[in-house]
Amino acid sequence: MPVTDVPSDAPTDGRATRWADHRAARRTELVRAARRAVHDRGPDVSMEDIAAHIGTSKPILYRYFTDKSGLQVAVGHAVLARMQGALEEAAAGAGGPRERISAMVRVYLEMVDASPHVYAFVSRPEANAGELRGFVSQVADLVVDALLPALTGQDDEVPAREDLDAETLTAARLWAAGVVGLVRGAVDLWLGDRLDDPDDADAGGSATGLDREALALHLSNWLWDGAVGVLRRTRTATTRA
Image 1: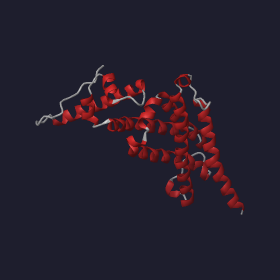
Image 2: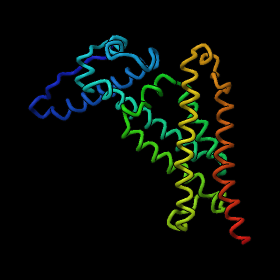
Image 3: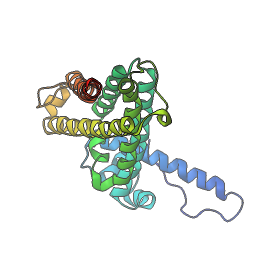
């Protein structure tokens, strides 16, 4: 179904708010349609091709998003919001801290795997650096909450941050930043291989030789054994000394 436009000038009477709401709804509709176009046509699709694919015109896209970077930001914001919600749900529904880390990694990979073209489109840093920084910060906070029970020996509940000593909280934040960076870097390499080899991508694998489940297992084990293993060994050595 083609995406239609609405008048650019809001009425001067009491219907102005209703027009504003209508325009906001149309913008959301355009974002969803553009996401589908990128999913079908690839991350390098032009504004002209996006407009043709969704049944509108380039001037309408430029009216709502100014340029292609503006459209990338809008699509990226919608994708990141969905991903954050899915990560929070995965973390909340898992059992212990190791299961929370594993669940978050798997959800992240599942969402990337569901639409690699869209992920590549919105993750380009020049397009939405601000949104990505905010998203990375929020995901890092989720990882901190997933790690804290193991780091403090309270495996059944997440301790309140105000009750933690500065050393433990700082260590958790540092590891969380590393977790996000490791997962994003590994996914970028894995996804790049798949985009370069569409036949392999259709088979669910990548030129690295890992399918999604294998990559999830590797990342989960590395993150857990690294973050928790190193810190626990350090604490044990300090206690014995």
